[in-house]
Image (cartoon, rainbow, N blue to C red):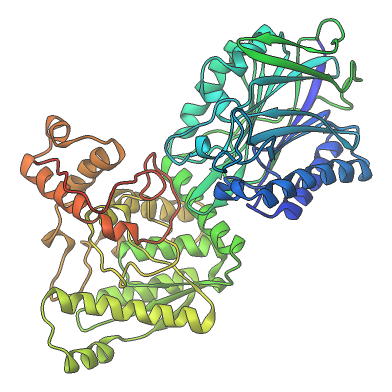
Length: 586
């Protein structure tokens, strides 16, 4: 059986940066060549970044993608890397966009993979299964492919597939078995969700069994708006054995020697059919020498705790949103409460303390312990800490307007928002908002007040998980001999907006241990009232919570983007009408 040294390049591209992404491919191809690789694969649409969304409809962008691919092939050859086959994802088209008046049936934009070799595009493959659920709208953008591309490399027949092809039984993987391939390469832009890595490995094993061949799975890493990609690239043998697996949330080159079944007779011109797909074959090389040096072993990375996984996802999502959009720094209101403390710690981990400004914005209702906790966190993390008392500004408003009750509470929050946005305008910071998913769900926030900001790192994090993350981050720091960033009193005290005397969240909301399970069932699980009651929740509490969720849709529609970590994030996944009279309680 021939041995092929495979390199999976788990890289972080940027949407629209064709030149930068091409440089990324060239750099990591050089690293793969230096490691003796005989085949290197990059993620789905690595050349354009992913997802490109409505850029698909711009014919200029499609043309630029195709031109960049041809340039990349030539540049790799000029770099002395032409003999190394490179699989890279890109945007292609064989017809006008499907939304245009001159659209043609079965033709249009394509989510594509190319194999580059000796300065040319030696083979292409168009994604067959197009996801149209959750965050995916690929049926809106692309036309599905109807072929399976099989390339002979070193005497091994290698099938090319893309992301969703792996998630559906039949199609390319069944065709790959019928075509007798020795390896399936699957390139991915698979967004992170908590525990998705536990689903991914069994899935790859099922497709390996279906194809009767090993699978080399490469996934991108990095943040793109609300999405974050965690990598988790791997190679799985035909019998389901996990041969090697890459770490999450970091760029990584996974290099591993894989023994593969040799191909049969030399391929003839033309094509055949397999599982209703046309099989198109090409040849790069009929044989290759055995890889040089000792056997390449990529190693196995052990899974981490859920809290560690989520923390790293949030850090990466925040860092890439800030850096890819070229913000120099961030600013946030630092109250001493658990939410702003977690966001501040995330920001320092993502950007370093010198790029984080934390502003204490005390009013007459701000407790002394909250002010002390904010100052303590600033000292622990080293961020730029400032104090801007809001009471004189609030008093000026109240001297000119007759306000009371909730209006005064909201006024305080809005004055704080004005100050943060003023600092943003003056100094160029990106404002981070700090409301968690539980608050967002029930509308427990002030529009243009505590909800103000350009990005929310904890938008998709339930309140109970916020506490778990804070506890984990402190314990992780202690384990490494570092100062825990979050004061223990911020974790242990009852949550409060501190907008009126003695105020607690529990004055308005059920305890979060009661609230979050209802919200998770309703928002993430799409359970109705009856299902929630059958699950054991108090009917009166369910009715109260569902009313708050349903009537807060207009607030959520105006909220800042934030990193998605759950199966159903507000905005990207859960899309409900603002004007909507349907109520689960009748």
